[in-house]
Image (cartoon, rainbow, N blue to C red; front, side):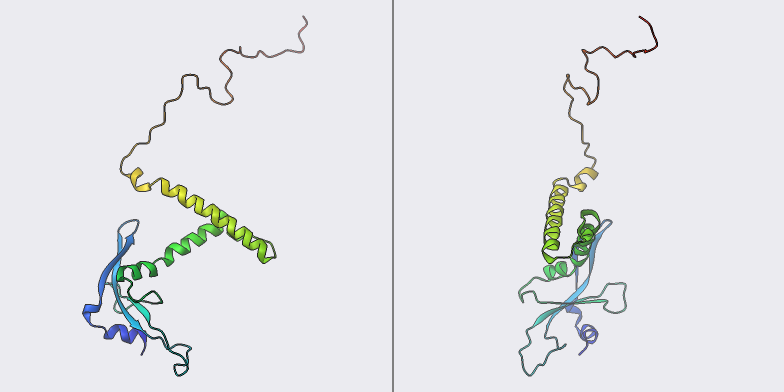
Amino acid sequence: MSVEKLALALPKGSWKTIRWREGTNDVLSSCFARVRVRSAHDRDAASETIPEEWLLIEWPPDEEAPTKFWLSTLAANVTFAHLVRTAKLRWRIERDYLELKQEIGLGHFEGRGWRGFHHHATLCIAAYAFLVAERAAFSPSKARCGTIIEMPALPEDYRPRGAAAPYRAPRTRFNCDSTT
């Protein structure tokens, strides 16, 4: 049976609206159904026992038919919401990978050996983990709420770098042509 036929044959009680995260403008949600299935692709059913997997189906309210399908090997007792959140993590993973390649330098490796690439990738991932931890320390939602970040008061004896010391008189220009 095709996945689309199976999705269309499911009763209305199988479909639930689930929210998976907050987007930039609104909470992201859609209509989902899940079913335990045994997939039949590229397997010889007579020679092996096929384990059950989750088939997750997304049917957005403004579409005429289901649009997305996922197979998952998560445990049979996983919650519906966790299954949806895990399936929807792909966008975040792709964003992280893009940032790793462009901003951190994962795509700049030009060596030839596997060991060198491993070292390069490890350092890039460690740098990215540090940046993510630093970003997490400063919540953008708190800054948007009208919280004003004030500069700390400067000490009285503060002197900007490169400024003349207060006890030193300004230098006068030396004229080579003058006779004294």
